Image 1 (cartoon, rainbow, N blue to C red):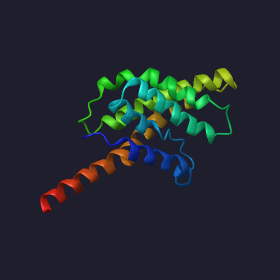
Image 2: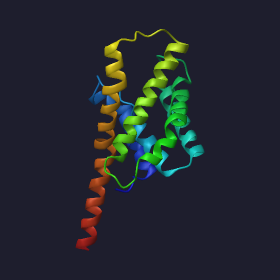
Image 3: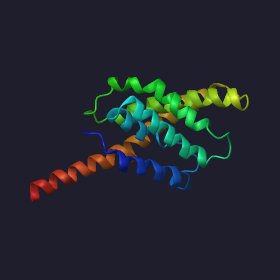
Image 4: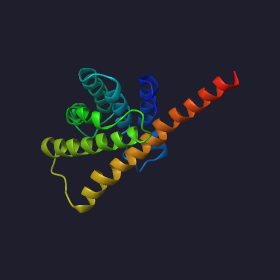
Length: 167
């Protein structure tokens, strides 16, 4: 499967960022993780760092709970920690985007947890936090990446292929 183009992928993530809590208020998705996975697959490391900073800036602008810059720093550190793992994921596989999204989400969760603990407050760390934040939520982000990013691309390719056959 070919990776989706960047601009529609960004707007899919932005739409999920603005309206995701309306439809799923109990989920704390890392909505830009699939977009970053796509950027990492297609672009250079420097470009990926800039995109991570830009996405973090968007999240920071709409976040009132933590200090400004926390999410930008989290996305940049996540890029530093997960960009080179792109070589383990092949663009042709159907599960590339969801698996890479899960990895990025996991790294982001660890980085953000450490930054919040360091800069803001001590967070309680127990087995349910470990299980939820570092296992369940990254898997949900991977599922979100498949349903919200991969499936539309698959459908687009099917319609495009059928249109070529019927033309």
